[in-house]
Length: 390
Ligand code: MG
Image 1 (cartoon, protein in one colour):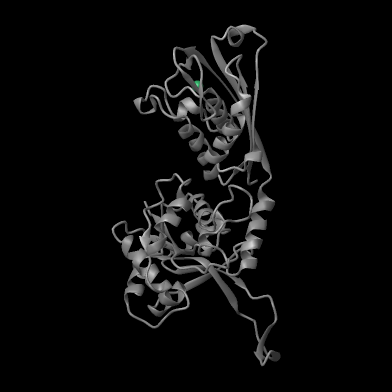
Image 2 (spheres, rainbow, N blue to C red; image 1 turned 180 degrees about the horizontal axis):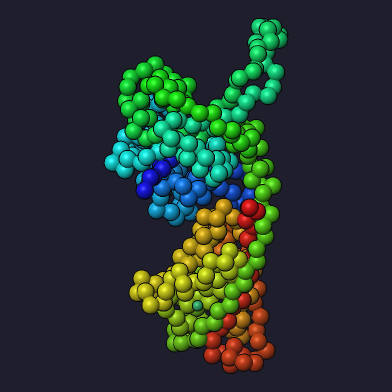
């Protein structure tokens, strides 16, 4: 079977006035907004035609990279390789790293283009199987002027001019050989490939596939993401645990002194269990028992924030974010009110949300039923998740 790999060049990258290089900056100011690189990789992983995704990073950026891919759970994403001093060195090093895999086709893409569609990746990969290179490009539509001293001086003909984007796709062996041959600095991989005698087809690119070069581009990219976040999901969760002998209960991530404990395989945090299920429910992703089977000894006595964090990461992996969560605890005792602020802060911390997006409430059951008889506790939760509409 023929295979295709993609190299995402994330080596250098200016800071655009931000604290980190642009490919690690966030797309928009909303809590949970993903990094540019995360978005680029998610788009590539959405193309089933791509069998491997390899990112070339700056040697100092291992931590930034780990953060950016934390939510991406896909075996096609290979461990990153350190890039070189120039873009061309970076691509060559990444190609060398793929040599043992020897894909039929390789695509080269800039980390700072997060909006290439899966269809574009597929079209380019498909063409490169013919033995030619293929690059995404758009015909120049604007009038072109040569400037002298700030003045429009000479009109330049635009007929036949195309603006190259990435991805660019090539037969793997031929591109690797072309990069190994020494040459003067090249504009892009199309130039390297052509110098070695290859032919490169221009494939209609996509206007949305713009490159983030300036702070204004980054702001525009954030607006594009924002405008697409309109698929609103609500999930609910419910859980109960029985009281047992003990001296504290874990509720919403906070240990509360009590004359009993709660019985369960993990720490029996009924609030966090209901909440994790609400989040899984919002994205149709099963439930806590499916992700963390009680039969698995690893979760014996586990702190339940692990489950909650996992649910939050599943939302992030879909490019979504949590808009708000709301938990109601059902018990006669202990009193929840004095601990509600700590619970709210803990949940906000685990999910990376502002505390005003977290609500903790409690009610007694007026001495009725299992809660009223203090046999156990219950919890209800809802979560609102916003996903990008497709
Ligand atoms: Mg439970």
